[in-house]
Length: 398
Image (cartoon, rainbow, N blue to C red; front, side, top):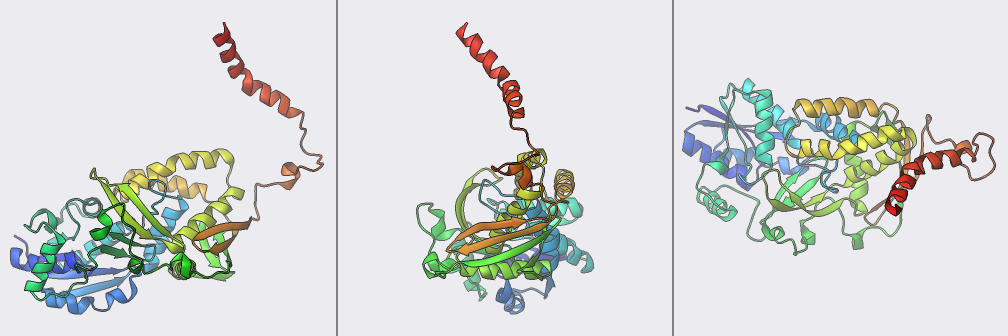
């Protein structure tokens, strides 16, 4: 028995159909919840669309600052990248949406929550692991695992039957997810890994041909691993990321097209735009290169794939991610400084970096004359490191 459901609502094809399906299937009240994570104009028509679909109300929470400061920035402090190129823009949004959705469910006295994730995707795992971690007693309804619809075209037909306005069409059938960190695209024509993404699909970044022919030079200031200013101007986390999205997008920075391994076992093709995040990732590493000890950096690098996999698979609210985060953040304490970057036609080039407590000492690093480093010390260093190689070689000869 379900009386009231809070649905994580985006206004797209899936969740628009789900509203009506929940009403018809469970004969319950449906409250739609939308998290404002930086979708912009996409949020404006949601109230009308939700009501047409059958929802009793739509609740929107502005979570842009919390999203950036408490989810995106910790992710960037860890330099998390999944399978070499994905900056986890969708994965990092799901735990916050789930958390806020559960808060709405509590306030509304709802006895269930629902999401629009398919039974083939990662998001179902991310939502439901978060629900379990934060409110293990709440009932979760996953329509894609219950209903008889087996394709997006079937959903379009259902929406047409109930006169529900939807954005996905036969001409543009791909699925889109947008927040301050990125925009993702999958499905439709993108299901063929050989087919190039249509240029009209992209909303955040210019094509390289349309990007300016002049390099844009910027500086980003960091304090303990967090970006705090661009061009010397301090900004809140969300405003800083939005500002960099604009600068990067104008210069065609941040597009990624990859075939990734989903947690549920299959490969999928995803296309992503992560303009500001791409700049921040490059700038962060530049400041780290001056401020992190070699062995500490090597240890952190070894943990990045594990951390990224944990986030990708939906375990944000897990003891292992929280433990790793403590370590990542401890490592970031000396990461204070400034990176100077050049933005040009899809590229982010580090042009300079500085830090007040830099471990780079020109007295030791110089190729010119110095009085602090005895080069003859290297002979013994090399001899001891070569000893095991010599013994191995001698055994081979014997």
